[in-house]
Length: 415
Image (cartoon, rainbow, N blue to C red):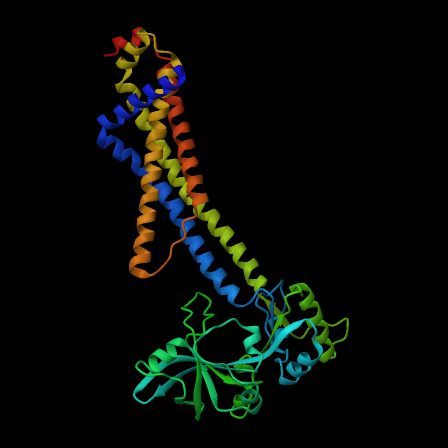
């Protein structure tokens, strides 16, 4: 009880000293406030970017492999011309893969035809992403419909002039009417809209169906050369639920090497890309950014800590006479020391709380006015509060120790 009473009295002395010197207290807080705001701000920005990128990567599928000409990550000093000489995935590869691979839930052949301007009557949309895919596209990708339906198997096989369009395309071309059953001109042909993808929103990797116009592969084959390099042909393979990504990759590599008749000693002439490749690269990149942010914020807090230490030395100098009186009345050294340590910690904690408050206000503004959700990790918030406390203890220790060692007679005479 005596200990808690001393702590309470020390707290009252410290709080009273801060209240009596409001301007000095405010100026002292600035360094810690800026430091905490910098650290939390950088961490929040990085976490927000990481979450947005991670959600984009997840759309690619955690159990999905993309058979392509070019890898998503280049390793070592592998000559670029070897990649350039590789063949594109072909319809023949896709058809044989479909028959031979056992661990796949779905296998789809896809091409990206490019950005086009599409029109319907007086309405037009720029940057429409024209694509074509085989029937199993719905098994390899996750999407919902705002209205309408997917291709039937007969429409896919027969290359019917039908199409699925993204939410933004439908909103731009058909703002006041139902797009289902309407015809638009694509690749010089009339195609009928049978479905509209649900709104997904933009993401950082551009993995969104909002501006997509999807055609049956067999329809596109009658108009363009779908195996041409400029259309980036790829085979998408989604594994079954009980098949791991490693098992699927191993089986897929074996079948592709067999189809291409590759000698066991020769390298693959195809790339098997998966989302974990991007995830590993993102983790490495964000690790560097986190370190840089922590270093910059830590340096700001360190500068603020020096400011707190300087103020505490001034505070000890101003209150030397009071310290002498307290000691002459029987105050113990640890009681004097506790006063200044609590004052230093209070300064740092107040600065940390203000810095956090500014970050939360900025997060609220970005969410309200810019529809951007800022991620503020509670674990890192607690870490910065602990860091503030530690900085307060370190900054106030030497001034507090010096105050506690003052001779009461000399301290009283200093007035």
